[in-house]
Image (cartoon, rainbow, N blue to C red; front, side, top):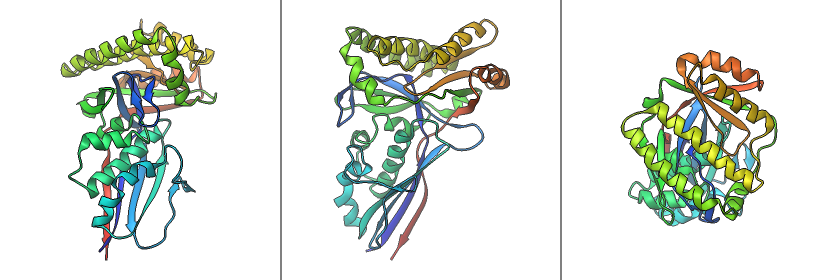
Length: 321
């Protein structure tokens, strides 16, 4: 039987209706609905490039050039093993995983899981897409966003499923500035573990559910600015809860920029998003990027211009006897 190499790429993500809290930390199941977008640097691609090889040759499994263990709790092999027998019935040999992140600021696990999912779905084109997403979640709970691209919603708590509600082309007149601050980012599981401890968490679930419903209606009308306005309000609600449980993501320096964005909104259109990392994402019209960048550079020396990007795709395949 022939050996096979499949290479796929996927873009990283950021939240629009932010996810906090997992009912099952192994299956990465959420307590509430959420939404997000794929992004890329404006001038070059931000991707996880993942290669799945089935061969009789002996290779190494690597992530960014470094060996990876098959035994880690969120190892890609937790995902690969589900489909191992079925893939090896089609192609003879051992299965190897290699992945490299390029130009990714945050959200690399989403992209890596989605690119791997695209490789597997190319090898096994008949597999159920809802099951595929459930299995991608073992690596990253937001992998469905990277898989589909554009603006997506993830709905359901026992069998969550992600679908695209707005194509990336709808966002071509907007840019997102990632304003990076030098402090160390906190693990996302700090948020997922602590948010449900607060009495406010029930209110947060209600707010997130309502925001997703509003978002779907805004997407239907292609009201992109209102989508980002909603994301800004959701950011404030999300981090209000984080502060209640002492998972303080927003530093004084980040907060100063957020206040500045509120002030400049009197003169130009801009919003912000803050997820779980060390960036403030400043959103504005594409023709106002340079002005927004001047403002951002007053708060941080590291600023990247981003755009909304598409879904995962296979970029190369090779079969050998």
